[in-house]
Amino acid sequence: MLKITHNLGQSAQSAEDKLTLTFEVRQKGRFKTVSDNGTELGVFLERGQVLAQGDKLQSENGRVFEVVARPEPVITAHASDWPTFARACYHLGNRHVTLQLGECWLRFQPDHVLEHLAEHLGLRLVASEAPFHPESGAYQGQHEHNHGHDHDH
Image (cartoon, rainbow, N blue to C red; front, side, top):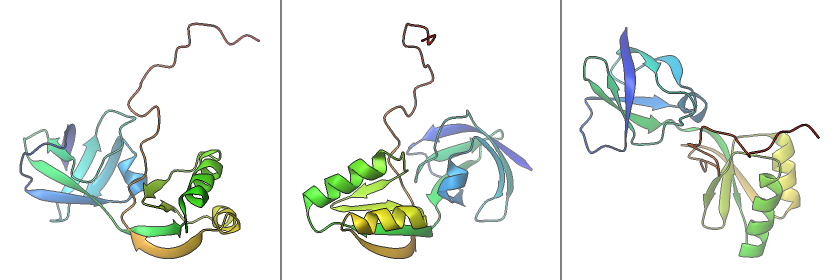
């Protein structure tokens, strides 16, 4: 099994193979997978990174693999106007839902409670399979959590 140990990010370096992965797998720092060309791989990256479409990963022997977001079941919720869209983002965001945002639409992984809420907020839902590229979040990439005070209240 070939070991992948470096994330080169959105490097212009050409890749000789691809890794087509779901969002769930792209969130992990350590996993086993098979490349699109059939190479068995062990991925050993720094934890806390989410692999993005187009990221290049390098193995210990220098081979480069490109990350591709695998189409997966998603719900795309369309708003008829910007106030409806903003309201939906606010309410779903308060539930810490992982969302992909577009022009008056948002996308999330299937969940009957969230689907009901989105419909209640006036969104039109479409279930499909598509690559899922959610927002990375306000604290993505930060590794420290220090407010300069203790939490003994």
